[in-house]
Image 1 (spheres, rainbow, N blue to C red):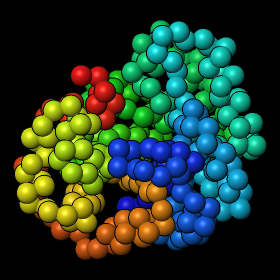
Image 2: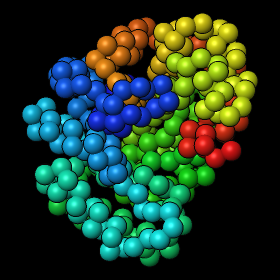
Image 3: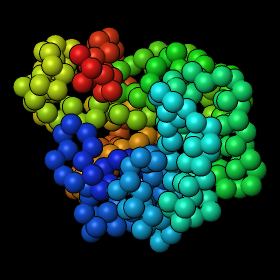
Image 4: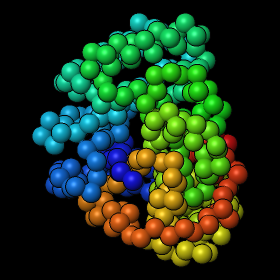
Length: 288
């Protein structure tokens, strides 16, 4: 399984267990030089600091960018969205972006078919001109996944998979996409760093008792054990091609790589599945 560097941590705080404002220059260069990770970096149009960092090292290390772009929740402007795509190349000072990915798939499917087709045609033109190589969608649930069956020119689906959120593991639709040679990228494998925190901090974030996490914490007492089993779980997902990892230092990076390099064990993790979406879906943590 190939690893992708999550760009959200580059230049800013991201994740509930992250107390640093980005990765320092020395550590970042070591990570980019490493042969243990692909040259793909995942970021978003609105991650200004992240884009500035990637832009600085893109040419030197041959980085390939996955750029997630929002359609918009309330008011969609075709002109503004198309401008946003075109301006992305200027942001990176390049004529080529590896993958352009719709960040908010739910909002994309709220648009009329005519408006959706205009966006997809724009992507296809960019692909034909070799300005991009891949077209992708970032999703959150099975409903969005099923809607992607209507998209013909699709190369990558990015989705959350972890030991607690096994929604897509049980979803046979992934096999359908794999047969079409569509790549599946996993994100949030550590539940945005929640597994590294103590019960009280988790309770404050979730605004409730972390009941569903208790068994996992009882079985695996320290963060290193918990990290290993989260990684072992993702390594056992045969439909997953690549995995997005977020780190805040080179030491963290080395630890993650070390655990990814360990032997894979066919462990049954079904007992850790949590059905409460207010625990497994980070975008809902502040909504209740």
